[in-house]
Image (tube, rainbow, N blue to C red; front, top):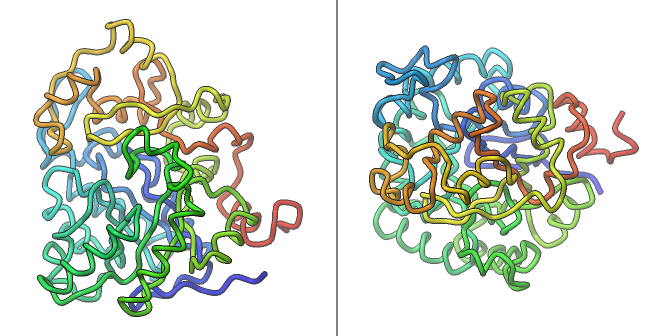
Amino acid sequence: MSFKSLKIGKYTIEKPIIQGGMGVGISWDQLAGTVSKEGGLGVISAVGTGVYKNRAYADKVIGKDKRPLEAINFYSYKALQKIFDNAREICGDKPLAVNILYAQSEYNRVVEDACRAGADIIITGAGLPLSMPEAAKDYPDVALVPIVSTAKALKILCRRWKKAHNRLPDAVIVEGPLSGGHQGFKYEDCFKEENKLENILPPVVEEAKNWGDMPVIAAGGIWDRDDIIKMMELGASGVQMGTRFIGTIECDASDELKQVILDAREEDIELFKSPVGYPARGVKTQLQRDIEAGTAPKVACISNCVTPCNRGVEAKAVGYCIADRLTDAYDGIKESGLFFTGSNGYRLNEIITVEELMNKLINGEDNSK
């Protein structure tokens, strides 16, 4: 099977592979820029840009760990612009996207920041992004791609967008419950047969047809060329993959973070409670053991990173601050870091270049050259 290019809005992605947006600091300039250079769609994560390059672009940080103070610094425009500039040096004018969580604080402001910084495509999940078109209204050429987990969610979103903004998504990502990070399902629903990606994808494909010809992109647990072909046969026009890109030289994550994923066994990868209000998947490490023992780092809401957390109320309930713990992972602090990965993270066993990985995905593992 040969793969066709993927059209999203006015942009054409040569290879129908979207690299998942992973924060804090897993997919920034080096990874996203290189994926776009190699013909896929590189996706910069807008999460936690204020810690980029040792907090050099955050206007105010506090404490010995230099935590960015308030959302204006945790989601730093200056850092985001620098990340885009660096990525552009790698990929030139090829399409480049950004992932912005709907649950994050100051969502509309960060969408505008991303548009100003040079994003061609905005991807949003972690909630149904009903106000996404309003946030990007001054940038009509920027393509908008929401993430959904059901056909019903897509129908609600399209109806609302059409009525309130006279706009429809340029593409939609349907994400199953095997992805890394935050899920679009309640904890118990992540394990139900009807919510597997191969079962939720076809209804979303059918619903999308009611709203024109928007491409549907499958995500969550996709690992290799065979998985991509399976999703295409079910109606997907492309796929989104995150975890597999952690195992690349260009991935912006710390070496320590990569090693945690490489060392993970299947039984180490679990769903955790999160201050965001959705279950999240990652590797069980010392942090989770310390949470269970009541010895985890004290929660103090410094960055005000996500609105559902309610200034640390939910963080205290689940036992950790997600901004601080993801930042520790970015900084390579194994003892207190939070290490997100998809359900297939245990299958990572090597660090290769993005070019090599893209070849494997397009041509097959044994035929990648």
